[in-house]
Amino acid sequence: MTSTLQVPTIEIQGANPRRDSPRTRPRTFSLSSLVGKTRRAYSVSSAYPPKIHPALALPVPKSSGDHSLSVRDHVFGDVWTDPRQSLCSPASNLTPAQRRNSVAAASRRYEDFEQKMEAAPLFVLVSTYLNYLVLILFGHLRDILGKVFKRKKYAHLRTNEGYAPLVSDFDSFYTRRMYLRIRDCWNRPITGVPTRKTMILERKTTDFNETFSLTGRKIEAINFASYNYLGFAQNTGPCADAVQDAVREYGISTANSRLEAGTSDLHVQLERKTAQFVGKEDAIIVSMGFATNSTTIPALVNKGCLIISDELNHSSIVFGARLSGASIRVFKHNNMVDLRELLREVISQGQPRTHRPWKKIMIIVEGLYSMEGSIVNLPELIRLKREFKFYLYIDEAHSIGALGENGGGVCDFYGISPKHVDLLMGTFTKSFGAAGGYIAGDKTVIDHLRVRNHAFCYAETMSIPITQQVLTSLSIIRGEEGTNDGRDRIQKLADNSRYFSAKLRALGFIVYGDEGSPVIPLLLFNPAKISAFSREALKRGIALCVVGYPATPIISSRARFCVSSSHTREDLDDALEKISEIGDILMLKFKETSS
Image (cartoon, rainbow, N blue to C red; front, side):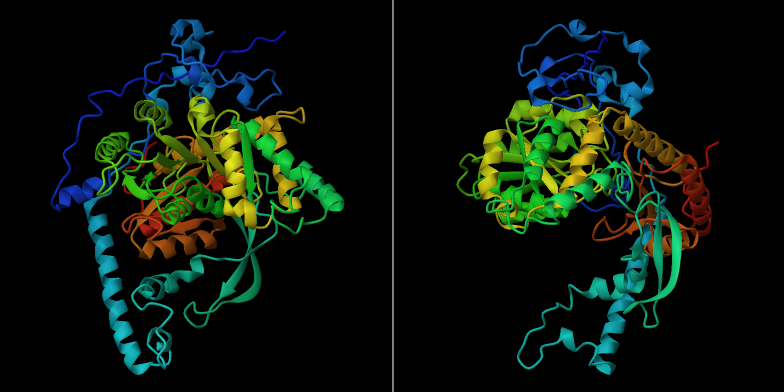
């Protein structure tokens, strides 16, 4: 009979008075405050006393092949016990890898996760603003001259025969004068399977990126652009075989919505397995990840309710919050002190004008922020939840499958029971090599969403190939096929992520993201370097995403690397060598190179 290690946990207790003391905010503009904004440290705040609260414990796998979470295994009591009764082995025997995962949550050390944000040199910030200023001035000058000498080209921006222009001159200025000049860095067509390497179809333009034509040449590139975290984007193997068999039996689509004749036994099976995997009672699946957020939030809150949103939440959350009609307040990214102050304010003041109590308060955060690579400070959020009694909604689009020893997301990552999170949202696009999303929660809430969520009621049902792809990849992650393939993929992803980010920092680049995040942003700052970095990377056989305003702050343009478990160490070393060359050419190494 094999022995199992009981899961240590994180205590939920009152916040530290020193950390929660009000901070003085600068009320006037100053250069020092501007520089200070670039020095925020997005790191996991996990330096909590190693005391144990049994209600926050994830279940210990019943066997080596059981890699899933189950709501039936949770300890739902709120009885405080002696922490020593929950420790089965001394913390000194734990490896750093164990401390980083939920098995050793109580022994996790803050320094295992902390990644300080390096400050950008002042001249870089000043030159970035000056570059944007020059772009804006020349853009307006070209518009003025163009409207005089090329009236036909600008006809769509003027009132024509009594019709107002559909496209606003002001709103499209950035697109015309910035994006169009470097449009070749995005929307690059690919062919084949986007695994560790991908094939990019080369394009050319003769009209300054207005149109493109294919040259017929294919470029093989190391793939850091796809969200293929666990490497399930494959055309061979168990997932591909299962999809092929499912298509033969069920066809491609059920050709209807879920509320009518669009539900198959595969959809019901996937909802049940998803709920078990994330540790909730029930779940629904939606055919589009963006719609999962944008149609669920309006079904949960409305006028008289309050949504408190992280300032860096995804646009699907922003869209859903606005669509709901609820009041919206924003707190600083992952800043629990700012969130506490905001909670005190909104609860004491109530609704605008009437000052009546809010019908409900919902805080919406992401598990892993896709542009920052930062992980939500879930332990502190749970502490605030116990104190202020709000609902907690977590978007795990990037964290499900990619974080935690079992791939169970941020709850698994921190060793916190999913019962403390009211709603868990996630997508199947990233770690599962598919598409669509899910919402998991208590059965009463999910039953409500089955008749109120517009994407579930009216949108097309998730197609059969996608459903089977998720089912098979989820089974592999949970170890249901009797192998450790899923666990090995999760561990390799964590190893690759830590190795790649550490090497980039050692080369002298300014890199965002917490340790273990598969999303690794490298700061470019200057707008001219957005296109230069992307083009130089493509020349050297590296496929990646470059990101600028409005997806990021205007001075924080970046290149984003998405690491996969399918990447080999040779792939990473080859890419690091080439990225170092690009960094030297574009002068992106702002720190001294460490040995």
